[in-house]
Length: 179
Ligand SMILES: O=P(O)(O)OC[C@H]1O[C@H](OP(=O)(O)OP(=O)(O)O)[C@H](O)[C@@H]1O
Ligand code: HPA
Ligand SMILES: [Mg+2]
Image (cartoon, rainbow, N blue to C red):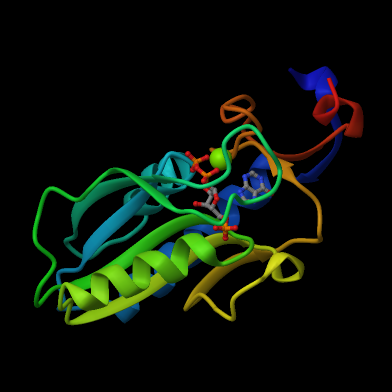
C-alpha cells in the first residue's frame, strides 16, 4: 500500500494538530446550541471520530452515506444516497462533517437537502478543500487544509476503496490509476 504513494502531502502530526484547532473553534461556535453533527460516510469517518473527541460542548451524532466517485478520480456528478439519517433535522443546528470538498457536488446536494428538511442552521466543516476541482460555487464554514489539484488518499479518503487506513495524506503514483 505504501509503495503506491508518490509523496506524503500532509503528515499524521499536522493533521492531528489541525483537528485540535478545528475542535476548539467549533466548541466556541456551538456553545449552548447542542448541534447535530452529521458524518458524511465513508470518507469522513476518521475525521469525524477524531474531531468529536476534541469538541467540548455536548453533541448528537448521525451518519449519512453518499457516493459519487466509485472507482475513478472524477465525480460522476450523480450523488447517490446509500444511507439516510436516522433522526429528523427540523429545528436542529446541523454541522456537516466532510473529509474533502472537490467539485462541491456532494455538499451542495446535502446542504440543499438539509435546508429543505428545515434545519435551524446548516454549517460545514471540511478537513480538506481542493478549490481547483470546483464545478459549483461553494465554501465551507471551517476548513482544515487547502490542497493542490491532486487526487489524495488516506485518513479516510480512498481510491477504489483502498488507502482509507493510511494515517497521513498521500498523493498516489500516476501508474496506480492506470493499472
Ligand atoms: O466535492 P465532491 O466532488 O462531491 O467530492 C467530495 C466527496 O467525494 C468523496 O466521497 P465519495 O463519493 O468518493 O464516497 P466515499 O466517501 O464513500 O469515498 C468525498 O468523501 C466527499 O464526500
Ligand atoms: O482527492 C480526492 N481523493 C479521494 N476522494 C475524493 N473525492 C473527491 N476528491 C477526492
Ligand atoms: Mg471515495
